[in-house]
Image 1 (cartoon, helix red, strand yellow):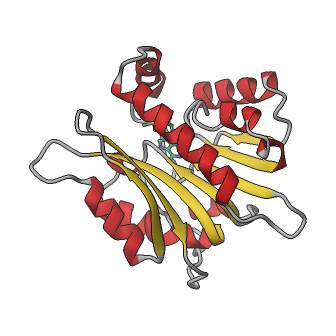
Image 2 (tube, rainbow, N blue to C red):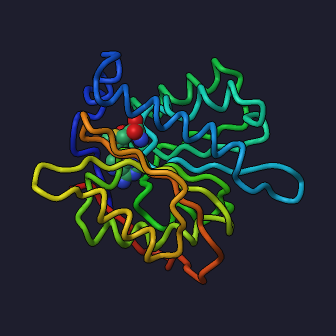
Length: 219
Ligand SMILES: C[S@@+](CC[C@H](N)C(=O)[O-])C[C@H]1O[C@@H](n2cnc3c(N)ncnc32)[C@H](O)[C@@H]1O
């Protein structure tokens, strides 16, 4: 299946430039969580870590943190982004920051086959993803994450509260609880609609990705 970039995500990234915007505030929280995860996520026996960012955009949540954190150089980062303009930006930023162990791929992060040659990650980011999916795809993606992660690995995710009476981020939290994750942090500002969660995969649960399967497609 060919998936296309259905929206002007380059323009969407422009909101990051307004320092008081909800997106800029969300970015600060995500970076803080990633900083914490770099202190707390497990390592492989040789001391390294793998990080995967699904739908990575221009990588501004990950790249400056890897460049600044003392453990950042031990991380092999894989940024998956469908839009070539944004993935190109991420690639250039990684290069300008000297992050030689970051690989930016212009690919469909919703296709299980994208992960065929990818080792299990110690840290996963799914930011700006769940709010663009059907409920079924959100659940399917959360259910699939254990297949991409080492036991004890940490996932950082975001979701807007939505426009209705309930808070849609609670559905995502329920999903993580149902599929074997322990919540480490959840940020729900009173005066903003974004939410940021951080959860740890308790243990391996046998989840695997079927060849040819689809985890999600943006609405
Ligand atoms: C809301 S933005 C979030 C970007 C980034 N994670 C952030 O939080 O700044 C969603 C991103 O997902 C990308 N995207 C949409 N569908 C995708 C897919 N199937 N595979 C990879 N990236 C995708 C879009 O191009 C866009 O950059």
